[in-house]
Image 1 (cartoon, rainbow, N blue to C red):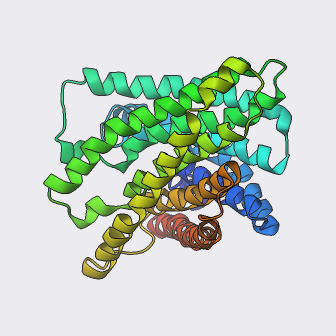
Image 2: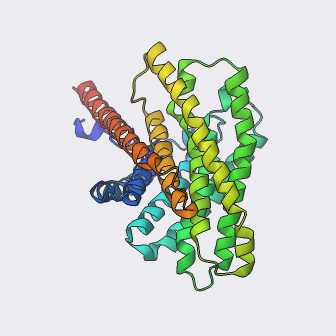
Length: 349
C-alpha cells in the first residue's frame, strides 16, 4: 500500500471542523465591524473553504464509523458538540450578510440551520433523557452543553439579516425574538448546573479546557442577537411592542458575558502556571477563539444599538486577542494535521 492512500488529513478535522468554522467566521465578522477589512476578507475566504470541508469530514466519518458517531451523538459529554453544525451554518450566513456576499443564499442557509437545529437539539435531548445510563454531573456536563444556547441564538442572529429581505418580515422577526428568549432560558437552566459543578465538585487540569469559555460566549451571542433585534426597523407594530423586551435583556446578557471574563482568565492562568498545559489544546483552543470573537462582535453591535459610548474601548482590544487566539489555534490544527500525516507515512514505511 502506498503512503498516500493511508493518509487521512480530514480525520483530524472531523471531530471539531464546525468549531473551526464558527471561530473563523465570527473573527471575520468582528474584523469587518471594526473596519479591519483585509483581515475580514481573508478569514471570510477561510470560512467559505472550511465549511464544506467540515461537512465532508463529518460525512466520511459517519460512513466509516456510523456506530461511533451515533454513540458520540447520544453521549452526554460529546453530544452537544454536534450542534456546532447549526452555529457554523448561521455564522457563515451572517458573515455573508455582513460582507454583502451571496445574500440570495441567506434564506436557504437559515432554513438549513433551522432544520439542523430541530434534528440535532431534540435528537440529543431525547437521547439524553431516554438513555439508560446516566453519567455523573462531573463526567457528563461540560461547557459544550452551552452549544444548545449558541445554536439557538445563532438562528436569531442570522434571522435578523434575513428578515429585511422578506416581503412580510413580521413573522420572521417574531421567530427571531422567540429564539433569542429561548436561548436565554436554556442558558439560565444550564448555568445553574455549571456553577454548581464549578463550586462543589473537584476540578482537574483536563476539566479546564477551552470549552468552558463558552460560559461567556453563549451570553455574548445572546447579546449579539438582542443587539441585532434592537436595530431592526419596526415593520410590524405588534412585534415592535414585543421587541422592547430585547433592550434590557440584551444589556443583562452583555453584563453576564463581561462578568465571566475575570474568572475564566484566572482559571486559564491557573491551568497554564500550575499544570503547565499547552496553549493549543486541540478542539478546546477553538472553543476559546469563538467566545473572544463573539464578545468583540456583540460589544460592537451593542454599542451601536444602545448608542452607549462607555464600552467602546472593549471591542478593539478583544479583537486582537481573538485574532492571536485564532492564529495559535490554527497553528495547533496545522500541526495536528501534518503530525498525523507524518506519523501515518512513517507507519507505512
